[in-house]
Each structure stands twice: as structure tokens, then as C-alpha cells.
Image: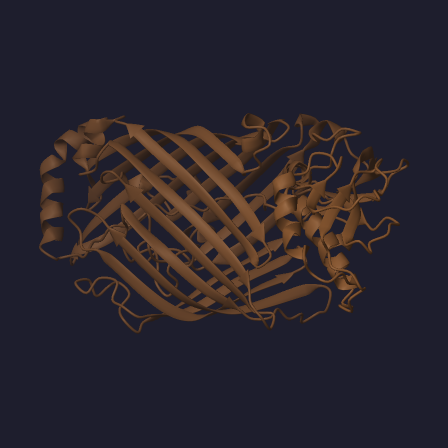
Length: 585
């Protein structure tokens, strides 16, 4: 802890001010640090950049008319094998390559003993193709070679396509083939290729689409990469009402982002956010003691690609606030708070470390944070203190698509070995802790173009957390219908549910309006403080016009009091309107 002379002289006045607060002369409550970071580059949907041959997925013959024989055996033939005249019993696997024989036998066994028909043949072909597809090798041909099946032996020829040539169309500053792990003549591993394309498309100023076409040689497919280069920069500005009562609800932001192609496509972005005080007095950006805004945030992000499927991300946050409370008429307590953060994270694909395991990303890094608070009574300094956090981070993120939708999660573990212990203990917080956070999003497609979106966000800690690590159960990005004023917690979770209605276009082909209903629940707890239990319902919409205009709005109704002992917080049946709008050029 760094004690200034004002701190030493102000201990007793500060204690007096605290005493006045505890008497209820002014109401106080825990509040999280409000961060306004530039938008992170969007992650493409898993597999969205790879166009596969869907022929094997199409329905085959539905003619179940018996052809006069009962299937006694099924024989799978490789590309160089001829049809055999000897009868087969059960399922026999020929020289078809690296497929899983046990899985193929299990899939084909139910067809043995059934009457032979065109539908059965189609179903057997589809079953073989599905085994390949589920193993990540969807490029396979399953055909019916000429043979006599009157003895009950069904023979199918299986040819798995291999990679022929890789061609790149479109202007690119550097060759993309070096970022792909597939080489000519190899089996086409769709999971591996999809992950490679996913990492290439994390650059939002470039789109890479992979398409397969017939190869020059029998049994091969050529890969064509179509690269679309977009404008390498953007500027954006906008407004939201997601602030706090003490620092103002209004938030105005201005930012820019770009890709630095000569620096290996490094991504940079910056966002300045302020309340109405800042825009009325632009000079307050200097944070002069007499002209300080209630809220000001500088935030920047740098993402540096290091090697294929590896990147270094550096995020900087600087948040300054001023809160004033009238203890008594003419007696004002002012608190100036400054938070500085620099997380440095290394991200890599799991498959870089464990070949063949396409299980998302691993993250390792360190975060440095400093929080300083200065307190004044009637403009007279009462004291100040600083507290530092140096914590280590490990994380795992993954996205899993399925036929009903997709599931994505982001798990992080953070640990502080006890840096700046005395400073944090002065604030009643532990410096030694380990905590984990988990974010899960499930998107499920329902009938009638409806979609159910469920989001879970939880934090579990071994001890009380420093101010910089606490979470807010309420707010636009948590339990809607409440605000971030409605409590802070060391442990807790938020469960959000949305029923997304069919999207509509006000200007067909140019925009999209997505309305939804929601039901949210939030819970938080901290030692020595009442538990926070929030619940709400309401409706909202997301609107996007091309890449230029983005609007998100939600109207929520609180179903519970945020804190029955504090009437300044959200109460049951209160309504809250959340809004965020941005323009990008």
C-alpha cells in the first residue's frame, strides 16, 4: 500500500465520514468497475467457411419393393477391388482405407436379414457415408458396382477422396497455404481444415471461403480458397444508457479499428467512452482535479498473430470515475477512483499441442491491475490508497455445432498468489485467491423459425475478491430489468433465456430485425453482505443495417427487489429500458 501525506493526515476524517455513512446519512452499496472495451473481432460459426459436398446427405430411393432376395451379407470394396462372386455372411470390410471397421459393422449389421430393396441399398450407402462424415472425413463416394445379388450378398464400393491441388483466388498479401495443415494426397480431414479456416477468418477484414471441386485425378478433390479483402479499417461511434446512477446513465463512445497487414495482419482497436460531463467539457479528458468527468474510459486491444493458430492479445483499460454523495446539507463526500489494467494473453488451438484433437482454444497469460481511490470531504483530501493485482490466467474455449444448433463455452481460471496483500486487506478483501468463470451459450433451433438462446455466466471463488474482480448480477449484459448498481458479488451466476422470433427485413437484402422475449435470473453472494437475487422478464430487439448501423434494446420488468433495505436500488415491478446503438464506417 502506498500512503501519501494526505492519507496519513486523513485517517480520522475518513473514519468520521465512514461513520456518517454507516448511520444511514447516505446510502452506499457495492458496485463493480464498469469497463467499455472496443468490440472483439467476431468469431465465425464453426465450419461456416467450408463448403462441403452434401450429396451424401440427400435422401435416396424410397422404393421399398422387395427385389426377390434377402440380404445375407454386405461386402465393402475398396477402389481397386472387384466385385466378388462368393457369397458373404454378415459384414465384410475390404481394402477401403482408414475407416473404423467396428463402426461400419455396427452401422450395417441392422440391414442383414432384411429383404433387399432399392431403399435398403440407399439407406446402407447413407449409413456408410455417415460413418465417414462423423469421423471428420465427409468426402467419400459409396456406389453400387455391377454384381449379382440374387444370393443375398450386397456389395458397395467405397472411395474416399483425397486432396488434390490447393488454389487461392483473390489478392492476398501473403500465401495462405502455409496456414493449412492439409497437403496433396492426404485424406481430407474436414475438422482440421475447418479449424484452419476458422483462424484465418478471425481477421474481420478478410473472408476466406473454402470450396471443393472434382480433382484432376480419380479419387481426388481440389480445394479452392476464395479470399475477399475488405476495407482494412473502420471508425465507429455510438450511445448507450448502461451507466450507473452515481456516474450517470448516459455513455457516449468513439473508436477506431484497423488491420496492419505489413505486421502479419496485426489487429488494433481503441475506444473512448465518457458520460455527458465529458462531452460538455472535452478538456476534462486530462482528468484535472477540478474538472474531472464522472466517468471516462480509454480501452485498446492489440491482437498479434504469432504462427498458424496462435496469437498474442494485449488489452489495456483505463477507467476514471468521480462519485459525490451529500452526507448532510452542504457536506459532500467525493470519491475519485482510477483503475488501470493490462491483461496479456497467449492463445493457441488445442490441436497445436495435441494433434488430432480439435477442441477449441487454450489461453494462458497474466493480468496486471491497479486501483487507486482518493476521498475528499468538502474538497479537503481525507486519504488515498492504491492496491495492485497480479494474477495468472488459464482458459479453454470451444464451440460445438450439432444438428439442432450449437453450444459454445469459455472457461477461465485466475489465481493471485497474494500480491499487494496489505493494501487489499485494508479494503476488507483477500489478496490470495483462486476463482473460475464459465460462460456457456446454447442456441437451439425450434420449429416455425423460432430459436431458443440460453446463456449461463457464473463465477466461483475461494475467497472474497478484489474490487477489480467482482461481478454484477444485474444490467443489460446480465439480468435485464436491473442495472449494474444493483449489487456486486464475489460468487454468483446469471441465467438468461431468449425466445427469438423470426427475423424480418424492413429493407429486403440490406437489414435484419430480430425481436425476442426474455426471462432472466441472477444470483450473487459476498461474505458480510446480503445475497443478491434478481429475476426479470421482458422483450427486446436487435437491429442491423448492413455493416453500418447496429441497435440493441430491451425492456425489462423486475420480479424481485434488488435489496429491500435500499430503496435507491431497483424494486419489484420497476421497469428498465436498456439501449445501445452504434454507427460504423
